Length: 59
Image (cartoon, rainbow, N blue to C red; front, top):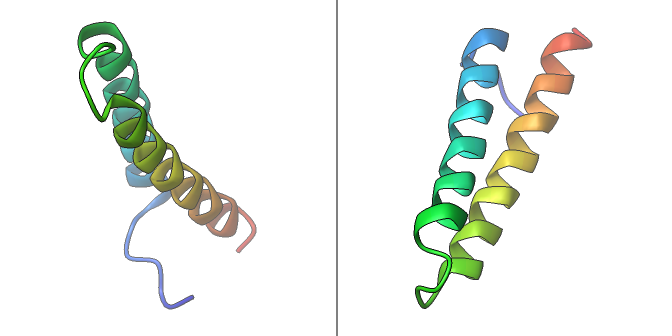
């Protein structure tokens, strides 16, 4: 992977924002069509961000 353009703090903030978005979807959109797919995409993005955080810490 190329150079990481995000600081560790920015990655943490982004991870927190995604977690909050997932919770909001479950709280307010649970019964809407496509909710599961939206959450899956956000969880996949969260996993990628977590990998970037680990890489940043190990540098």
